[in-house]
Length: 90
Image (cartoon, rainbow, N blue to C red; front, top):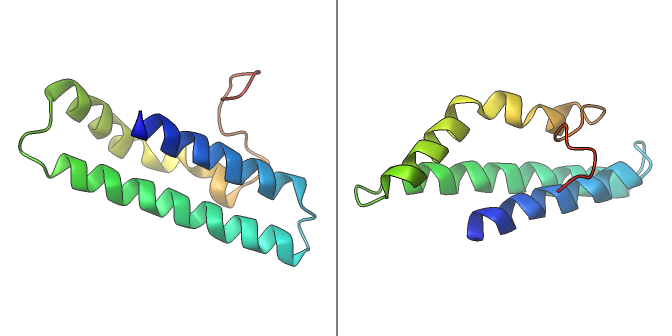
């Protein structure tokens, strides 16, 4: 569930960023926090993948995340791109 919580954190920070005026200091702060959260998630992913005891199903998911990372995180630098294509969100 820690991965689900981390992804929910991304949705939260992106939502706050999208609600702020793009020219405001508040937007910049939310954007910086989102960037940090994405960086932290990538670090956690890479640390988990370095664990030789990592269960195979988890490793498969994390390798997929790693392989598609640039597409999964395009919303960070392009806020008009939705985080996902799920109409209800996360």
